[in-house]
Length: 483
Ligand code: ADP
Image (tube, rainbow, N blue to C red; front, side, top):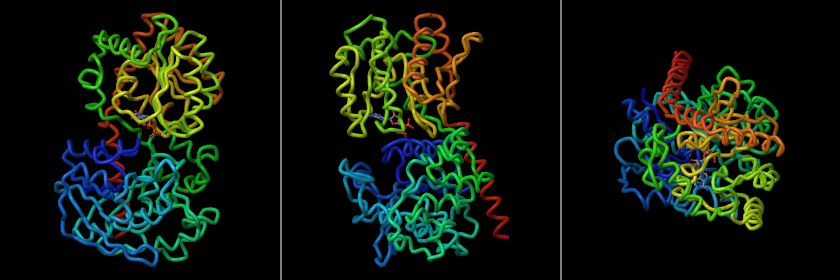
């Protein structure tokens, strides 16, 4: 099996969120299992600054609309390729600045999607499967069925993974010409989407197999509530749509070895977690309330998807119930402002840090008692997996990957790894937190939940094998088609 991962980000090279974690971790896992896996990424400025790359000497001329752009292929070792086009990728950010997305994103990623098959041909790299991720690489499967329907790619299958259907790469219809596709594709059966172009749709209509990052989310995306206008397209492909839950990098996220936390611990000896907790309370100057008041944390993007509005609605009452709160995140301006405001009003009980701070995130996961994730929708979610591994019990909404990875505590059976609520309402969030607080004050019960959470296997082992199975299914289909 020769696999090519095509993505706009992959750890450790470049990462802005879950997508980069997933592609990076999968490659690492395939490396351990001796699977021949290649990676193609755009050569962003930050990669060039951090990693010593070699120029392969290979050049490409990629048409984007009426212009042709020069592309150069750089490499790191034998299997990692970086496709360079200074005009598009030599910038400070990946997709845009706080002022907004780069306006030429459709041209940038049309370039990259076309550069992937071009680079394969140039390098003589004939993958069995190209695994594409999100809208930035979603044109690749359609290109293989159209402009690159060549003998070279006759037996190359494609797998398209949707990490978050909320981001589809929708742009003005006049930009369709950037894709180089024939006019028959600017139709409702093609990539036209209410008069605009929808790049993710290109992958959804043409990839041999589609996946999303949890089984529940794979079901949800076929409904109007979660489908963001693409539910009809996905329903048509229901037979080719699979859910594969994400894992986490268990070497990076391990409280027994984590160099970024004040003390190390594991599920047999949690004394180090007590040290982490004390330090976190001190660092966040949470001096109001009971010494043992439960410490509730939130870590993540501050966007409507994450349920920040119902959290803000419930926060003050949660504090009055005796809890203390730490929030780490950045995102929408109005959420940032309201959170800062809350912290000002509740000094000593609520601490808010606006920004992206990896080291602080480690300290928060280690030092907190509860991680709150009241997401409106959640394709998979990594924060709850990390929290569980650090013995921080998740309280979350029963949606997408949260429903699949957290086992709701059942008091009569005394089993569970966290607490789930169903309705997207502040009141339900509060009630659910209250259930968690009750278990928290009943010491032995809490210890059991925490131990169960820490015992969950969130490694990539099982899921990477599932992807391999899907690659084989996709390849089998492609080969039958080619015969
Ligand atoms: P999403 O991909 O929707 O943003 P996930 O829960 O899948 O959410 O993954 C988020 C990842 O990014 C987690 O590893 C989380 O710890 C990390 N993260 C999110 N926001 C921040 C932040 N402000 N500082 C540090 N790490 C963050």
